[in-house]
Structure formats: structure tokens, C-alpha cells
Image 1 (cartoon, rainbow, N blue to C red):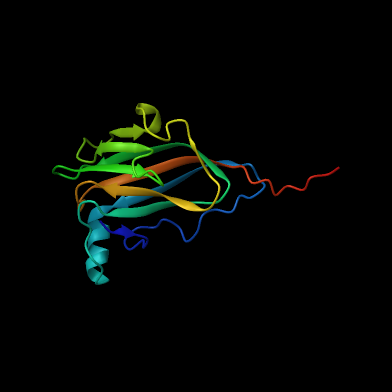
Image 2 (image 1 turned 90 degrees about the horizontal axis):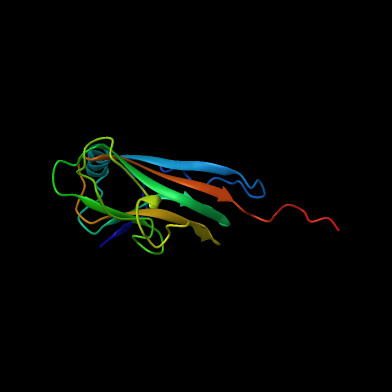
Length: 158
């Protein structure tokens, strides 16, 4: 298993958004087209993804609560393909989602009992990761997260 931190072939953003002190709720998302990612990795001379590899998909800033995470299949893989979505717990948000499901199939943390079903607090910056239980090379998926910044950097007046 290799844990990839690069974003060859997809845009996860250059850094986590900086909403310190704003207490803002927002949706972070990434579109992953594995045919394009595979082609870009080949062109860059990078290693192809295999089963059990993981990808850092969405950067999460420190002092953020992630309320829910979801995955939408836009184009099915075309063969056996499952994946997990998590962080410290590799399947904390989604466990064994079918990436070969019909286009339009969606999964969310509220669908079942996972480690982070009621949300997860990030005290320090981290990422939401996609763990490929089976290698992905043609699927197109969208991963999203509903996040709230809870940084206490607002000045306290006495």
C-alpha cells in the first residue's frame, strides 16, 4: 500500500482553506476522473495506482469539524471496484462503497454506522483520504465534505 500525497491528474487545491475565526460552514469537494488521472500519471512518469493505495483527496485545516462526507459515482469503474473514505481511521467516513455502481449513486456518512458517523474534529491540519480497495482506472467520482471552522482566534474582550 502506498499513500499518495500528490495530485497528479486532479485538483485538490494547493492548501486547505483558511477560515480561521470565521466559524464558517462550507462544502469542500474534489472531482476525480481516474482515466485522466491515470493518463496524467503515465505522462509524468509516476507510478500507477494499484489496489490498497490511498490518495489524500481533500485538505482539512486545523480546528475544523467535518459534519458529513459523501461520495458520488459519476462514471462507474466497469469492473469490481470498492473504496473507503477516511482520515486517521481509513474507513471512518465510508466503508466499502461500490465504485462500479450506476452513475448517480451516492453514499454519505449518514447511510450507515461508521467511525465518524456523527462528525469528526480536526485539531490539526489533515486530509480526507480515498483508499482504493480495488485499483481504479476509469471511474469518475466526486468526494465532498461539509465542514465548519471552529478556530477560536477571535479576540476575547474582558
